[in-house]
Image (cartoon, rainbow, N blue to C red; front, side):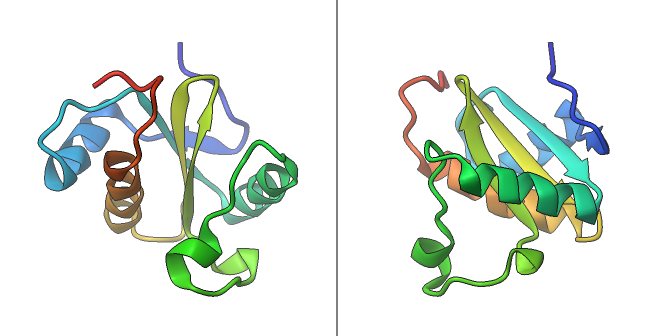
Length: 113
């Protein structure tokens, strides 16, 4: 069962699989992906940043901290599932592939590939 998120559209498994094939030859792990309105995305990012269990990797990835409004997508783990959130105002394919590259590099014990 896919978790429901208000103001979000589910990104289909077909789209996920297509993007995954561009970044990895491994089987697609269990991932839920959503496109959110900009307002809902920013609100969600703020909530995630308040959660001490979530690691914000902006500085690690880009070398600087920057305003949340500049974030186009994010990926996090929740109860053993990878969740990708993408602003609906950015090119979906580019943002999705970028986030999936992170997933392909990460080594999570609870992700079975």
